[in-house]
Length: 162
Image (tube, rainbow, N blue to C red; front, side):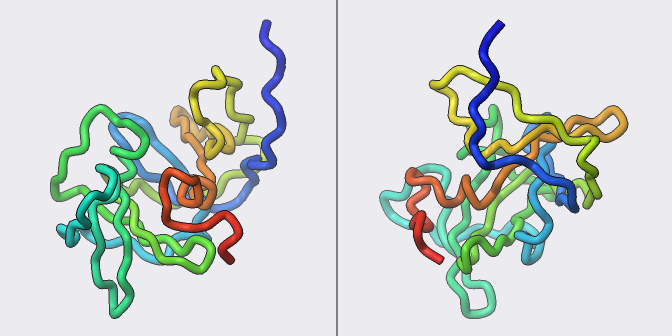
């Protein structure tokens, strides 16, 4: 038996979550971070950017970086088709777009449907996973999208940038 996972301060709480698919997994993020959902359009590439940073798009006069969440989270495939969408997020007063396979729906999750994220090997970064939601026969990986977008390797948002 392993010891319990240390408290990270990123605990999932009840509320509304936008659910989306990355490969065969379904994820949920706080609906309050979502600005809009758009169909995928090819962004303008940025030279020497990491593979997960697909480029930028002009969204009504705002230059928005586009992150392919499938590449960022090491999904097996990242195919672009008519289901592929960009979720436009407002994270710490910055607008960021994330590419996902498809958007499922908006779910209201109560505290009784959310379990803590499982403890994992220290070499696996799960700091952005806040819990596991279960609805009927579906399991949702709940993530703190702000923590993920603010991580140092993203280079998008400074930790103290408010």
